[in-house]
Length: 177
Image (cartoon, rainbow, N blue to C red; front, side, top):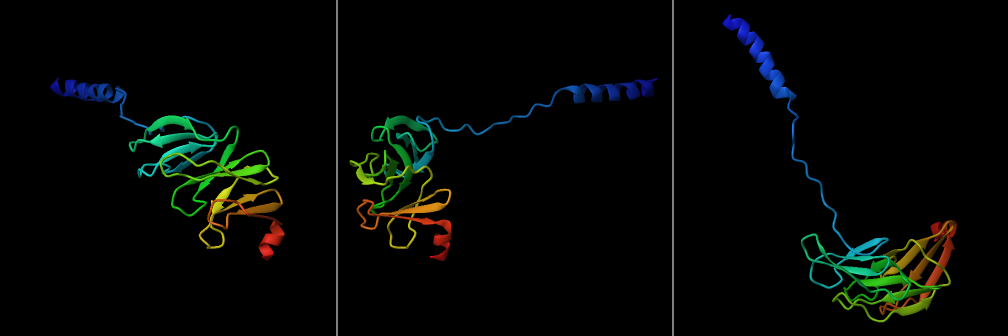
């Protein structure tokens, strides 16, 4: 009789134990909260060694170093759109490139999260996707913007942040050069 009870009790115990839902602790990364909208640019704008966030609508969020940010202060000029962040004058501080109406605006960084008055250059175009890099190895950043059949290169060759040369070429011309 004991054997019959044991044969019945063991499967019943297994059923009870296995029928309880298994609970696991699952945690997901909570993305940081910040002000602003559009494309996000990350750089150390105030020189404290902590990443800061600038959104394309011109809202600056200074990093606290723990994944949180001091919520937004505007740095943009009127209705301009931030399209790139790079060191355009070679001083080691992040600068901002904005798209104005038919103009490009370079705002040189002061290294404390603020910027100097914009340097305006007529572009005659509306840029939407810009990559800022040193294309020719001279230490100066250039903005490149691919369009459907042309590539526009905007150069800051003086080291002052002023844009002083713009070249547009078709993709086939760019491959030959």
